Length: 117
Length: 235
Image (cartoon, rainbow over all chains, first blue to last red; front, side, top):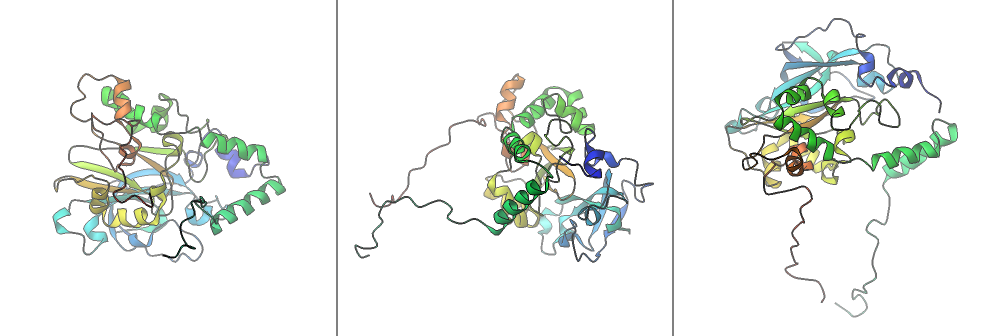
């Protein structure tokens, strides 16, 4: 089996563990308020449309990894910090019942998708 | 109904055509083998490995955590290490030895509390913690579940028979990057004094996805009730 550079790097270490330490200093910290950017995504993305331009709170710095937009093309040159962010459901969906205003949604986004609020 | 179109009792195939995506998978797989990226034996080894996996290790992980607060903390801090204690090596046991795009090595245990209930969905397609939960159920991969769980979680949960009070926060985890979520529900009443083996039996797959709560009177391998047809066909 011929192995690409990414496979060799991740074997025995794991993915995303193999990119640890490659993304530099994280731009955001736990508790930071952010807005999800609405970037163009002509080819590939894993950042869902329903999150775009919504406000969220960073709850965890999860790992460093090439963003999906790069990794789809086997480009692992520029890993980024990934953040777990928490949304209020009432911020995502205009008609989410106020009765359940405490309900939330958590998901992960890479640093390029976040702007400080 | 005329006599000629009467049901003739010949069994029809369940699925009589394959989807475009299945055709694409076969084409890409055959190209990979032809170009030497992997062999047919590699592919066999992989698919056979995938079919050995199931939700039992995750059930045991939850049962252990219910009994041992230190282990519970390990589940939160280092789920890869915690998984080793239930026989799952996220990093080394898979044939590829590094995880695949659908099984990255970054598990995370979402711990429920009396006021917080987690439920997992992958709106992109089907990301699922396969090393510790096995193959995802068919409904988990349907567009219906994926679209509606993020948008109307309480309604979808009630379709699974799970109705939660207003003062419980429902937190939907959309698994669309490299983390694979497992829900740790709260230990149900009526299980006082139970052993780890007993507790493991009630932590079903659906409890680990978050669409059900464990109950002292329901085990993963219970016989399913048979509901007879109200209007049986033909006979």
